[in-house]
Length: 68
Image (cartoon, one colour):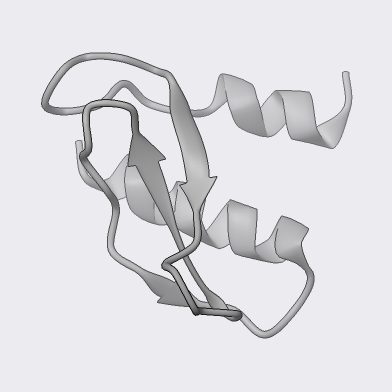
């Protein structure tokens, strides 16, 4: 199993709608700020990551999973 698919399996459901259709969200105009967002509009806290996008995904996913 690849690292990306392992991370996808670790996504906890949205605390508001229960969905797992969650994606990496970048605020408009931001280059190093990331968040996880659900299709219902719920978002995790925004994190700042200056490294690779995969590190940003992992950090944002960690923040998302703390919400539950």
